[in-house]
Image (cartoon, rainbow, N blue to C red; front, side, top):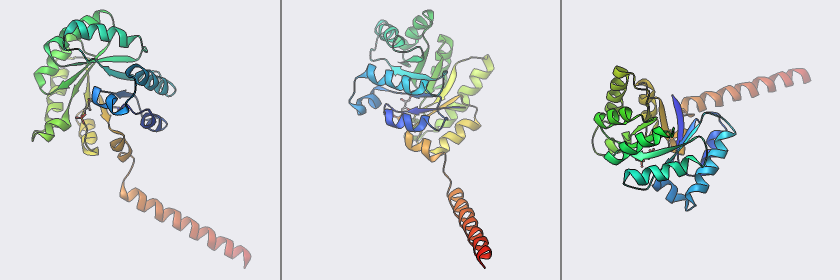
Length: 227
Ligand code: E4P
């Protein structure tokens, strides 16, 4: 399962990328707005950071139009920023039309704001490279986000769709574990959740004891030599 960072913050991306665990970045208009920077500059800088670590990354850049023609126009422009930029379009009727038109130009799309198995089916039929079901927002509304992932996995396997399932709107490490158990292709994480993946209190406790014992044994040896 690939791990992406869900942010427009280049410092967070640099820090996560140095671990060698990062395969891409997703952005959305809210995340870009948080940075208060020019859209093209942010996307281009993200691509430059990632290409230092891997050649097969993707950066998702989201369109702002609501009509298919507008999305296609924006998508063609974004694809010029860097060969690994993929165009994020909303899961709407127009979005599905735009995915197919961009596909004819060999421009890959990430269909975002997916909340149902049928939407995911349409995204795959349109030839989306990635579909992004939002598990956290479903949970926030009292639903079971991971059930959607399970259903999409089954549908895609039934028909051998190549569209990658990207688990979005991740809130905690449990979502990452469940995504991996269900066979999702990608998870995109806020930097805080990414950092949490490395940690376990028993690792810290265990390491503390190992290091203390090592220091003690070395000190005892030194003392023995001196005696
Ligand atoms: C990523 O592609 C999505 O835009 C993002 O994960 C949404 O997350 P949120 O529900 O926390 O805004």
